[in-house]
Length: 97
Image (tube, rainbow, N blue to C red; front, side):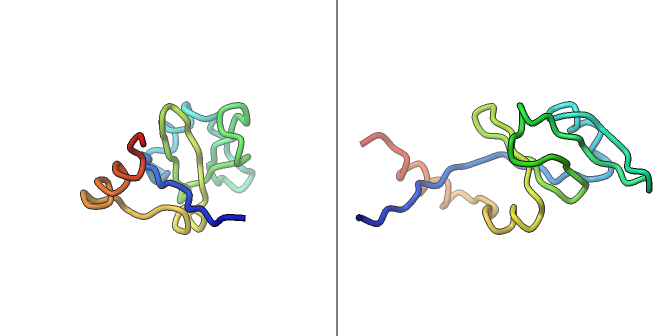
């Protein structure tokens, strides 16, 4: 076997908050309330297959029309803020051979 590195890619991301959860719910499912009043998005698994429910504090990403949602813990493990140098490096790595 040979070792490979997965090519990095850029995503647009937004943290889901109490203020924007209603607006974002329409992109991935329906807004719901638990019995204790906790608000969440019941996710349509056909749109976002990786989670069932999304709560404030989760993150939503979009790339090429695909939306994904992540808990804060998972998002922090997978993503870092972008900057010009990273974006140039990513463009070079993803350039056609």
